[in-house]
Length: 101
Image 1: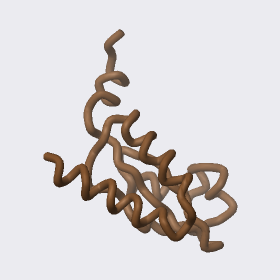
Image 2: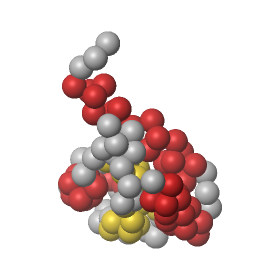
Image 3: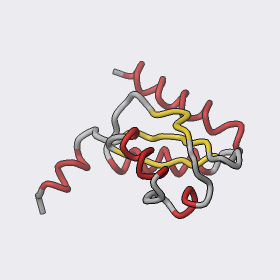
Image 4: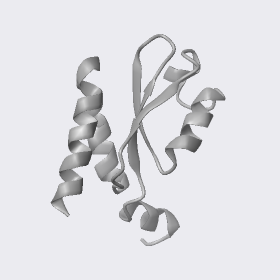
């Protein structure tokens, strides 16, 4: 099956982002436009987790673009890391992809 949504996910359109919530916790997600997604989180239209922890700040967004599946895999791995290792993990993943090209 081919269609617009499949084409989008096959292209490298997604980045992985990290937010710092008002209570000091982190939230990791994926988005095509992290700044727009940040606004949605701060408007209370993002994840349930961030809705009660507003305002949130964008700490990091990968510069590399990934397929949806790749971005979700990185997000899953980042979420499994302790809080102090989330940002270094994303920076390293981003750097490794950037040097692989």
